[in-house]
Amino acid sequence: MSEIFVGSSDEERKALVARSRSGDMTVSNKEVADAFAINPSYDPYSVPLDDLDPSHPALFLNDTLWPHFERLRAEDPVHYHETSMFGPYWSVTKFADIMYVDTHHDLFSSKQIKGGIALGGVPDREDEYSLPMFIQEDPPKHDKQRGVVSPMFVPKQLADLEPLIRERAGSILDKLPRNEEFNWVRHVSVELTAQMLATLFDVPQEDRMKLIEWSDTIQNLGDPEIFATPDEGFQVLFQCLAYFQEIYEQRKKEPPAFNLISMLAHDESTNNMEPQELLGNIILLIVGGNDTTRNSISGGVLALNQNPDQYEKLLQNPGLIPKMVPEVIRWQSPVAHMARTATQDTELGGKMIKKNDRVCMWYISGNRDEDHIENANEFIIDRGNPRHHTAFGYGVHRCVGNRLAEMQLRVIWEEIMERFPRVEVTGEPQYLASSFIHGIRDLPVTLKD
Image (cartoon, rainbow, N blue to C red; front, side, top):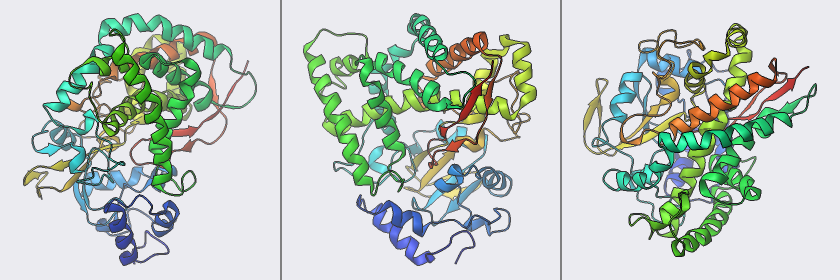
């Protein structure tokens, strides 16, 4: 038995993974959590390399992931994990290898039917639990559907949105309590992104927290503290489908308008989607609009507090905010990984990847690769080339809303600096139990006069 796990045997864990990989959505989340319970005292440098698996959500929950990736980058940058709670896969942990995978969509497919873009995807799934979406497609379908929504994120549109974002950011910040502890994530990060999502979809602002609930549901599908089984979480997502299906059908009858649902409803490549594909694309747009910005807003506050010399640098020169923003995104790496499926036998990093093998690009590791980013393990807000990072991906799947995310971060920090001498972290951050989204659930802060 591995030194890493406590409780179940290797054979029992493999059997449980096989059930999950068969598409059984009633597998108990607690059963999985118990079977893969980690020995908290294990040293990632002392266990056999083959036993090291950076995909375990507990590593992200406890913020103990970093030495796992450090060792993999140094000893085996393209590493095969035969047994994990998500099935067998290859870990790709170096910047250059990640870029190669991401820019060769002909060799590494994103298609949902092959397993999709996250570890744990079930190949050949075409039931009510499948979530086809354009990020889980290859060209040409990917390009056509992405092109439907991309006009929302062009520079002119972002310039038009900036005054609204600034007004909302100011209003949110002005309502915050002084001299008492509160959760920055809920009061600021979530609120700003929720309001923007409601605007992009053109749904009532009073429904904005439904969007956050559905985004959170996707990240919590395997969390036994939230849902007993993944199926239980999907029942919440089906509420999302019902909500947007009605809006989608209504907007087909209305003149075209500049909002995401109308765009989907009026383009020939997206105006006749099956319910699961509609749900998939809605979830993609919600998560894409929520998680990157939300977790980078929270991550920036935490990073500055953990690096007081950089906070002092910012206080002395707020003009550094435009450079600080991409550094915050690199440092936080809100999307920890993206997965692909090999379409043919191919070589990567000296290893032979077989057709249909699952390949995981660890963006969060590539962003700490000292061979491609100078002083990668340091948070430096006046970096010379701050956009040199993997956080938004590369190639045809590069994040379509990356400039909107950067703008929201820039605006919120400009407004913070106008109001508060310092945002002080006064409690321990609570992280998301997910190896897909590197998220912060709770960040206690105090604004002192």
